[in-house]
Amino acid sequence: MSDTPPAKPLTKNEHLKTAHPSLDGAIRETLADPNAVRFTEDDEQFIKFHGMYQQDDRDKRKVGKEYSVMVRTRQTGGITAPETYLVYDEIAGKYANGTLRLTTRQTFQFHGVVQSKIGRLIKAIHEALSTTLATCGDVNRNVLFPSIPTASNAQKQIEKDAFELTNALLPAATSYHSIWVDGYPINLSDEIQTLKAIPKDAPNPYAPPPADHDESGNPVDPLYGKTYLPRKFKIAFALPGVNDVDLFANDLGFVAIVENDEVVGYNLTAGGGMGTSHGNKETYPRLADIVCFIPRARLIDAAKAVITIHRDFGDRTNRKHARIKYVLQEKGVEWFRGQLAERLGAPLAPSRPFSFHRQGDTYGWGKAIDGSWYLTVYVPSGRIKDEGDYRLRTALRHIVGKYKPEFRCTAFQNFILCGIKESDKAAVEADFLAHGVDPLSKVHAIRKNSMACVSLPTCGLALAEAEREMPAILTQIEGLLGQAGIPQEDIIIRATGCPNGCARPYLAEIGFVGRAPGKYNLMLGADGTGTRLNKIYKENVKREDFAAELLPLFTRFKAERRDASERFGDFATRVLLPEAGK
Ligand code: SRM
Ligand code: SF4
Image (cartoon, rainbow, N blue to C red):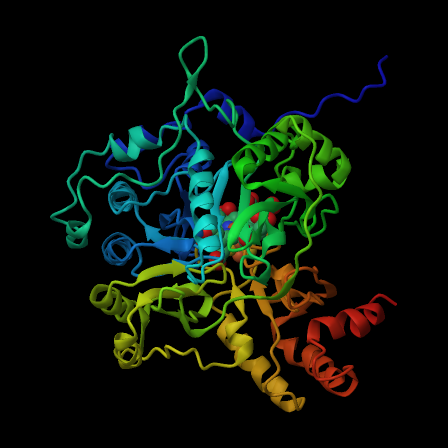
């Protein structure tokens, strides 16, 4: 008998991708069926590559499943032309649930899109010169880069590199265009008024490379191959100083090394990721390793090389263990360097020194080098909506329509309006105020530094509330900080409805990670720069016990912190976590 353990079977997704390499499944048939209310179970996997997830409103499950999809756009670096934003606003009202959701990866999500509206919504996004191609699925997702428009030469170079990389990594062999673009010949310009402002002959900037073909004439992706990646893949660019992309949470990162306002190359980081599953020790959040320095000219080659390492070594037998972070962790960074050098055909140069001194967004007005102004505005959990006196959606429609600022989504669920004239600043502020929105984000620091994932009612994986509960959690914590005598303390707080980590809760000084309805793991101890993970302080804390758990910690922090500069996360790592482990 052989000692070799039997090979583990491939996951169902791998068989699906093999059977339908152009990722179309029965999508066309479902779209053509006027009675269909949802995609088939198999197609739920394919539609991800087209930028959407099948969902149902979980608040209504007792009555019955009300199906819709969530659609996610691609916005490299969060950059969105004002004309595009206005189309998004209009389609959010006409085809989705009337809100736009800014995500933790600088994109927009539309929720509640029912079957009959999906084609129109995706076509409108394409005509608005964006795309939903590969914003989900086992491919490279939206590429992040620092959203502050200083307009330095180096920053422009990073922007150019990120857009070129985005296109180089778009999957070529999918059925996306044949289903949603060429295959959807409906004219939307009478239905969506804002499309009239989009030049008819302007090329869509998201252009996938051409596909290869196998001996039978079937399309094969030149980079991803026939079965794409074992799992999703995420890339971020950063500039040293402010870590405004949570670089180390990404599968692949590029830190720009700038000399005399020129990007000379990038430090390459690899193997970051947040997702884990409760009780499954094979899965864990992990920070990326700093691997090497890559000259600017080899950026795309290096990214492709890393992607092929994931393609070739990622675990295709277990989707929970399939990210490249597990390859890095299990085979080691030296092995990874060897693979990368071999695939690049050149020895690797050592990484250059760099550091981050903080994370997150910088709110309020800033002046770009070209003399124009930009305004960063806090959006609670990224939800652009009109609710009561708070009419952010209407305010933005008005302001973007009138002043035509470039709209940038940040990686912390906020936005920046760029290119505003000095003479318009006061009027822009007044417009926001007239719609119940504070343009200068004069809220408590914990709010500005908070994030919560979407969670209920749309997320099918949610175990507990996040976005909907976060305002109450923050109000409560503001009160507790006051009681502890540190009313203005700035603490990074993030919440997710499950351990998948969509709001990167493992990089928060206080993270709440949903376990069950009304129950969360309390995570403590990340730092203020996005370079240290937190740890579980206590499991299964009931929502009603948050105050009882946190007040004593804040009181001790006030009494025992080293000095006023010690952050809560550092204190928790130094004092609270070692005690929790005893
Ligand atoms: Fe996420 C799955 C929402 C950023 C890790 N994520 C989901 C789904 C699609 C649920 C599903 O699979 O059915 C959620 C849709 C909820 C809804 O109703 O909208 C969802 N993820 C989000 C967003 C919208 C959170 C937000 O509140 O902003 C973010 C959209 C990003 C984008 O624009 O592309 C979002 N997700 C992230 C991040 C943060 C990041 O990328 O910087 C992570 C952690 C980083 C990472 O990938 O490791 C993240 N999402 C996951 C995972 C865990 C993956 C893993 O390795 O285990 C899942 C579950 C899965 O893929 O099976 C998931
Ligand atoms: Fe859904 Fe979990 Fe992601 Fe929150 S962290 S959006 S609950 S998958």
